[in-house]
Amino acid sequence: MKLIQVLMSLFVVMFMAAGSAWSDETVNINTATVKQLQKVTGIGKKTAVKIVAYREEHGAFGSVADLKKVKGIGKKTLGKAKDQLSVDDNKKEDGHSKGGMGY
Image (cartoon, rainbow, N blue to C red; front, side):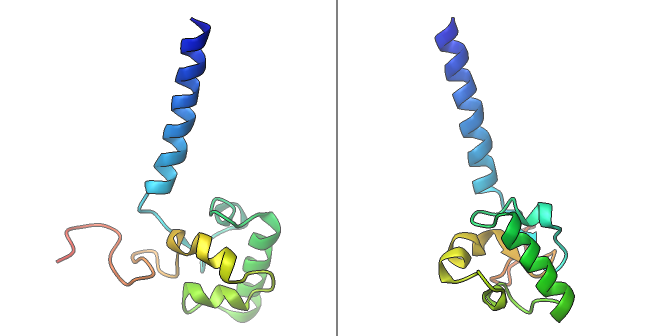
């Protein structure tokens, strides 16, 4: 019985992790809070604070790649996070709509 509970718990954890990885939702770097940015792979609290501070000082980001202008964000961090980020609430970085039939 104990083994079944452990296995079920592992299944739930794996399902939750996979769900966020497969999600089509992106975090808009021009509107996201520190807490929202922290949900993105590779972005911790310190980096999220730097992103928000940079945005408040310099204005909206033109593209996700502009995050490289923020101190501490390089190719490695951007590579992990780019598919989870956007600069527009309705579009992914590739310009395609996040939902609908794509017509």
